[in-house]
Image (cartoon, rainbow, N blue to C red; front, side):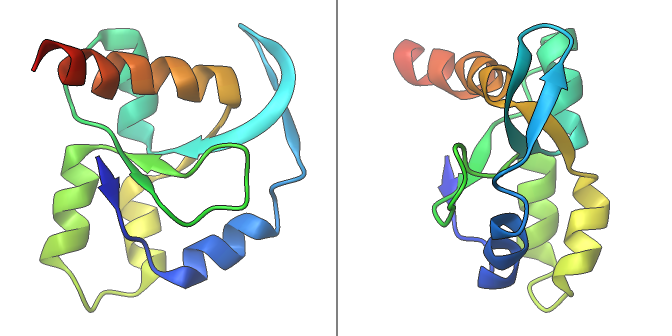
Length: 112
């Protein structure tokens, strides 16, 4: 599900968009960012939701789970740094991001 994220996160994202990661599964690719919960769910198969930002300059928008989305909504005045610590964003390759989206978002859209 799409969600709006403060522009300061997009600015921080622009500073690292040119970097790549060496993924153990897919090799060297452009990086993407997802909360720790999304990263863990790709291995466990847990149904935790999948949200992403509309504002991005990178190859994939930042992504997070339902729990992180709820925390963000329940703390509207909290500094972005607090939300980013709560989400514990991790680097992953764009192919892992695509797989996470397919597993945590797309399959539920197709079923519904």
